[in-house]
Image 1 (cartoon, rainbow, N blue to C red):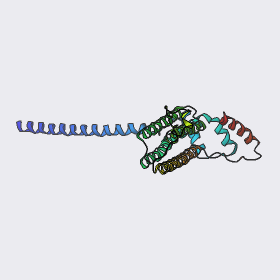
Image 2: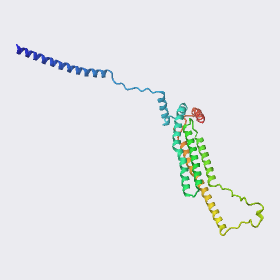
Image 3: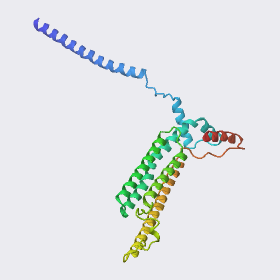
Image 4: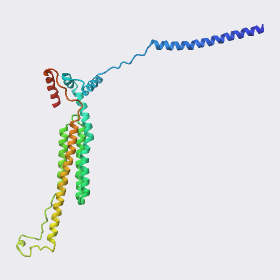
Length: 279
């Protein structure tokens, strides 16, 4: 009885263990099924992105920049998105200006430094010229900052301002390099002494030749100074022309396409577009 009891108990224990394993197995499988069914019941939908006004504007502007519109559509869309296009163009022009304007003063500075090293100038002249160059550079920096911070920057005003600043700099150089000081008067001399024989100056031996040599050297120096200033003008003009060309070529849109048909509608909208640009 005891043996049978133990056997029956063992059988019941084994049966219970099998059932527990089966239940655990079914629970795990059922859990997997539930996960699968839950996933299948809510299939993944592709996310629908809402395109707002800004995105639409950017899309149209991009298509305009790529030249995808022709005829009346081209000019009308340029009118409709004029503010957005103008803002982009201003940003592009300001970016180019910020990169190119320093080159104007750099070209002048390089030539000036070479000139100061190759000529025997007084310490006073070198100091004065350096100060004038510093003033010119500061004025250009101020014009650059004003242009970069302007809501509607003017290329014409920028070029004109750079020209004016350079001319002031050249005027200062002329005063330093080419100015001649009046000869000092002898306080002891008088008009009465001019007619006397004793007042006639007598040149020492070789004095006249020395004066001629000094005069020739002065003329040569003045010629060198004038040549330098002329070359400096040429260098500045080349740098300024390069800046002007780059600013004028900073376009964000291709040229307007040709009108379709008789062009009446195109010309009408073109007149509106030109007025916006001129305003």
